[in-house]
Amino acid sequence: MSEKYHLLHPPLTGPFPPERVAEPTFDLIIRELDQVQKSAEIFMYVWRADQSGMRVGQAVLAAAERGVKIRIIKDIGAIMCEVIEMNRKPFFPRKIPLLKQIIYKLIGRSFPDTFVEDDHDQSLGADLLNHPNVTVEWVNKTHTKYYIFDERLLVTGSINIEDRHQNYFDYMVALDDPQLVRRLRARMQGDVTFDLERNIEFLCNSHHSTGGSSFEIKPAVLGLIREAKKSIYIEVAYLGDPEFSDALVEAAARGIHITILFSREANIGNDVNYWAIHDLYSRASVEVYL
Image 1 (cartoon, rainbow, N blue to C red):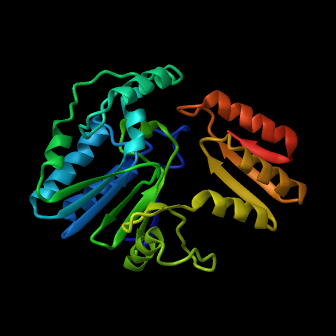
Image 2 (image 1 turned 90 degrees about the vertical axis):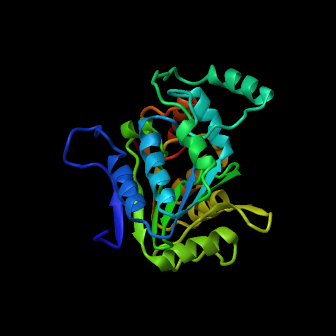
């Protein structure tokens, strides 16, 4: 990368909404996988067996074949989205208990019908699961998405590995700095505390290697809302947590200028989203953009 810190997003001068939104992210990930020398780590929420999933998976397999050590951390909770939405094919084959299958079918009725048919299968995911240079760990309830290459480059943000993210106005940030990689690892292990004085800092929901877990993002963000002095800018796809709404109402009452960029059409819970933003708008002076 030519820049130490780089925001990955589609061209801002073209049509809106932009097309192929996730392409800059996937292009960078493929380039880095093609040239990574020692190690690559992928922590992912949704990884679907579609065109984007196969493209990344093939690059991961090629790196593993070169002798690169690959660590994949996959969120079990995302399987629900993977089997309900789009082509309904998780990238990695994993047995789903019968009760979970029933629950997914019931919950799936509340999701928009986004089904697409394709010829992709899970064979590439199975190849990675069985590769000697690849380790796959399963975790739950973190929603984390990042890539780390050679303990040097960190790419993190909101883009899952799936085709549907080509139609979302999401982005990732690439941080080419070994010190920041070390900082992220220390924060995720709970070895160092959150420091607002740093130019770049991480809030983490983490499962520690010692066996414990920490979910620090929500209380920390609520604290930042309460401590705001002048303005709060929020860009979010989902709303509905009453604690956040109440904190924003209190902030607005203190004279804090609040701006919210809100999803015009979320993939799930769209009615709840609009109810929540209407409730907030009726209780507080906030600027809302779709």
